[in-house]
Image (cartoon, rainbow, N blue to C red):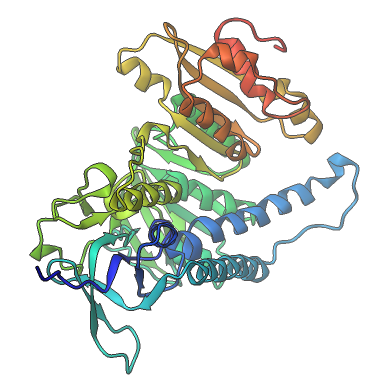
Amino acid sequence: MKHERHDYDVAVVGAGPGGYVAAIRAAQLGLRTALVEKAEPGGVCLNWGCIPTKALLRSADVLRLTRDAARYGIRVEAAQPDLAAMVARSRQVAEQLRRGVAHLLKKNGVEVIPAAGRLAGRGGVELRPIAAGQAPAALQARSVILATGARARILPGLEPDPASVWYYREALTPAFLPRRMLVVGAGAIGIEFASFYHALGVRVRVVEMADRVLPSEDVDISAHMEKSLSGQGIELSLGSRILEAKRAGGAWRVSVQRPARAETHEADVILVAAGIQGNVEDLGLERTAVRVEKSHIVTGPHGATDEPGVYAIGDVAGAPWLAHKASHEAVACVEHIAGLAPHALEAGRIPACTYSHPQVAHVGMTEAQARAAGREVRVGKFPFLANGKAIAMGDTEGFVKVVLCARSGELLGAHMVGAEVTEMIQGFGIAMGLETTEAELMQTVFAHPTQSEAMYEAVLAAYDRALHI
């Protein structure tokens, strides 16, 4: 019997945190692997999202701390932001990691093909040129993984313009610092950019259709963030929608309908952070059984689509749109292709973080979600104001909140707001993965003095056993 010839065992289209991890894992398992990418390795996350934004936010944190140095007994000259230097550093960080990804791909024997990939028949991938003089080509693979990611949703009338309308790319490489900025969207991206630009002295107003900031967070977290952001001087228009935005005299005049009244605000720049849409265009999906709903590819277990041999992972496969979700999906997908038996990714155990000032992190259900699911719950909260390490650091804002099943003690959800809580949430993520109950958490020894002691005290508080409040 004549066997069909394949150039590769696995072809991955897209080299973001899902795609490049899929390619590396496939190569580790001995599969002949090709990675097709039309831009830079690392995708939006590494080059234009997660990494460079955190570099900018770190600069904002240093600026805040320096301005507050006298409180720590340190005399410094007046601190001033250098926007160009901040941006240059963030680009250097992204470039360093991009080179690191390229090295890892080479080290693992992945063939990286600079082209735009498009499905072309069973196992076929058309390779369209992205550079002058590059000839069209094609490859065959037993399995094809689509990891093409997503992009910012463009609002009609607010198309990207480096001079006045910014999406994440423009906001990461600004040529100037505006005096006034209106941010559309109070999700993680909008609040992170609002925190950064406000720290640099920009007057920032955030407009959000939902009635609270960070609407996917627990309501107690949102309430704290609303109070904190307002206290810092960031203006909030919640439960609001933009009626009209007109450019006049070098500035924007934006009409906003708030619950009780209509308002008009002026801004030099409008920064749009109003959601994303999957990159499903021009992939050849129309000639396959792959289904697309609301700009995202519909997948089953381990990323399988309705087309045999075609898989989708990461942002193009839908929410949650998180880099770490994409990477874990990548590993499970490839191990499934290799004939192993990987565990399916549990969406309810994927942590989410917002690197604003203060930071926000959560994993699992909110209190409202747990109650809506019919769970009888115990809720514990512990403030950093009562935490020794937080007091010593001079940053006592925020708290830890846990939601536990009243019957079994199962940890259903954990929510944090405060300094560096994004570095703490994995503790509760591990606990949920191990199906830990309140008993094990109470028996765990937390080092002193650390902020993580607030995690322990929050669990104690759920059972009226908190020791330090």
